[in-house]
Amino acid sequence: MATVSVVYHSPNGHTRALAEHIARGVKSVPDVDVHLVEIRGDQVSEGRWSDPATMELLKESDTIVFGAPTYMGSVSAVFKAFLEGAFYPFLGQEWKDKLAGGFTHSASQNGDKLFSLQQLAVFAAQMNMQWISVGDSAGNNWTGGTIYDVNRLGSWLGVMGQTDVDEGPDPVSAHGDMVTAERYGTRLAELTARWVHGKQYEIQRHTLENFREISARSAAEAKARA
Image (cartoon, rainbow, N blue to C red; front, side):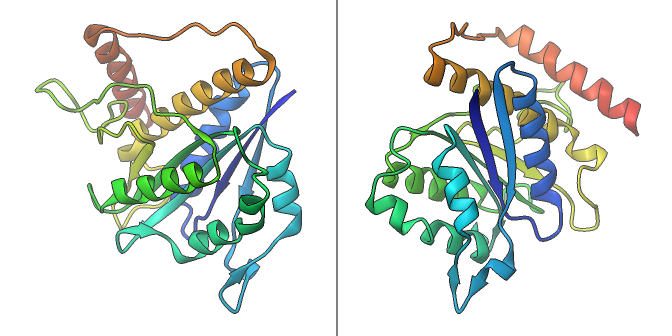
């Protein structure tokens, strides 16, 4: 059984919603297990993060997906403490050649989320991991597009989510982000199965028309939820 661990920090639940949808996508792939691992503020003492059980779980995982809110242009301080807490796995190259991916969330449309994803990707590179891109085209970039499109924020490095400051986790407005996260989870799981067990993998290419059909279904689902 291949294993994917989704590691996230989510003070207000928005990043957790993305993590849960990624996990849902992972679960759709046979023979791939998934763990949701929350990084909490009470695991940080005097600026240092520590949780041996989490580190042991990640050591045994084949793929690690990193997720945090974007605060003031970078990942949250608690999640940064977790990244720094991986210093000893870094020294021992314990995560070398594991697969990696990332996601982030902010209230602003941009919010400098790209920098957070770059921060996570550079961390994964320092750990000698193999980074997995989103795999979907950009949505909501033509006259027929909607905010419910898949990859509506046009991010390829990792999944971006956006929710207005007065909305709770997983609102209808963020439906496309959640669909994007779920599709990313499926992609990560399929690549993990290929990476670990050599399972046959079919590259899922889509035409512009086909991708717009996918986004149209997402918009219809969102309207049904409203």
